[in-house]
Image (tube, rainbow, N blue to C red; front, side, top):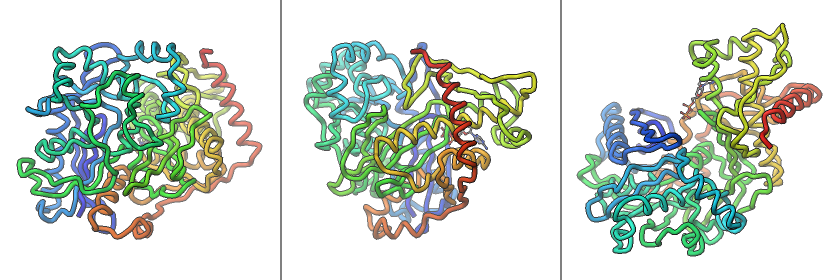
Amino acid sequence: MILSLDQGTTSSRAILFDRDGRPKAIAQKEFTQHFPKPGWVEHDPHEIWASQVGVAAEALGRAGVAPAQVHAVGITNQRETVVMWDRRSGEPIANAIVWQDRRTADVCDRLKADGVEAEVQRRTGLVIDPYFSATKIAWLLEHTPGARTLAGAGHLAFGTVDSWLVWRLTGGTCHITDASNASRTLLFNIHSGDWDDELLRIFGVPRSVLPSVRASSESYGLCAASTGLGSIPIGSVIGDQQAALFGQLCTKPGLAKNTYGTGCFLLQHIGATPKSSTHRLLTTVAWRIGSRLEYALEGSVFIGGAVVQWVRDGLRFIRSAPEIEALAATVPDNGGVYLVPAFAGLGAPYWDAHARGAIVGLTRGSTAAHIARAALESIAFQVADLLDAVEADADLALDELRVDGGAAQNDLLLQLQADLLGVPVVRPRVTETTALGAAYLAGLATGFWPSTAALEHQWQVERRFEPRMETAEVERLRSGWRDAIARVRSG
Ligand code: ADP
């Protein structure tokens, strides 16, 4: 079996996969979110580690599998989050600053005002935003007493969560990251495939703190005896969205997946040449296998499945998220009602931090069912907007969209998605695609599976949603959505 460690933003999970790529045991533990000030989000690195190693042991226990029976460990993780620790003691110098944390917004505004964004974008494929790691590293160096001195003496280590886990798993002997995680830091040049001196200068990060950048699929080292995981080889490290792309076997140019979780993350594989976006998407490393880098275009929506939570908790129209499907199905259409869930601004392709949500088109005949339907439709409209941008940028038409995440259990949503896109939407049998992607890469690195081609036989469709709506109706709906978006934009 392969043991996959999926270190997410709110919980740590461990899943054991067998040779057919089927999940055999799962364990999961939530951990504490710290909000020390408005806009700040932190995690305790010790708690990340303890929860992760704890669920690993629990999954093994549930399956009745000894560490010696596990072929390799794969690691996938929340991206961009920053951990810094003293190499000598392994002790973190502060809490981890989480990707959602906005404390460096002013620094980012200043950098943009200095006019460096175009150059940064050219090298990294990203935009300057507090979301990414670089300004968080600089913040910790600036605000933690003694940190600059420690860095100067070569004692300080930075890592995204993958690096921290590998460091702990190997008993402090291995300080590495993979190219997919590195590509989210703003310090990594996606063309050369390595840290970039000019970016290090712009963001004020010393090279001495950085991990070495490795492939996403290779044997980095063995788990230390102290972890209780025997001496299992660690065979993969990959960011969560890229892992899902691999878990969906989107390994050829043009193949794309969307994850419908709290937010939505759409990634399209674009091959071995990075293309920069002219539609405000990100260019990101999908993975590095051997010395070959492959790339993806990425668009994200902040409020995806979360709009369903709002219908449940804010409006109290339903008691559980799945109930939205039955409620929305009590009306034949949205009755002209559109809901724009810009609760936290709008993400790609709009990037409007100041936009706020709205419900438009209400009449005396509008009911809770129309609003529920509009909420569900808003997820599909946002993903359709992302896909338009991806197709325009990549100049590649999509054959189908592979889907996963909690809200992908909703058939009504997926049917509407297929209708709006005009291409089939495909839900695989195994929807644990993030953990599966990390397992695949670890298994490929260690000979558990012979080749990616061999995995293609494993990926099975659970249901395929074919587009069936009339073009005129699609156009009418999308134009209603565009009007609604225009009303909430701040600019
Ligand atoms: P994350 O990994 O981001 O925490 P998940 O992939 O677990 O998210 O998905 C959870 C999200 O999916 C929640 O926002 C929830 O409202 C939504 N969700 C779960 N089931 C359904 C459903 N049947 N229909 C619509 N939304 C759903």
